[in-house]
Image 1 (cartoon, rainbow, N blue to C red):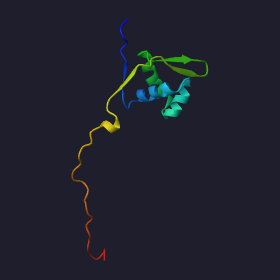
Image 2: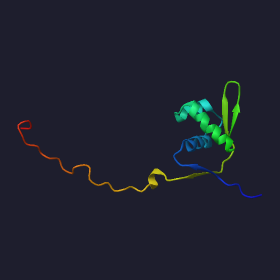
Image 3: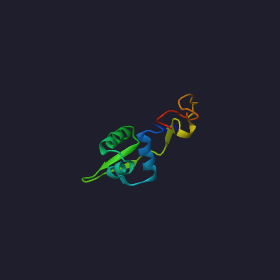
Image 4: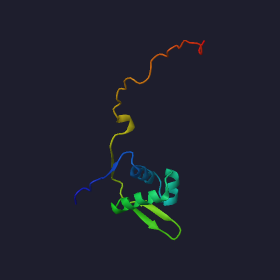
Length: 107
């Protein structure tokens, strides 16, 4: 059997936040997940349906709650982290020293 290709997730995306949370916490409901990530449940629902379509998570719907279960652990997060981004040099803009203003208003 061939090795499974890891699921690629963009660093900094909402999918990454959801998956990292699911790697740490189980079992979790959609309501708790939305509250802890501070996002609307409707938006979370769209993200979870996309992940379920890709076979990464499974949604277990009960009469009063919906549980989220992580099916795959082979996740690959790609993209630049904040610390890896190249800082670019800024020029101009601010004055290095303040100008002393003379005049009748400033004494």
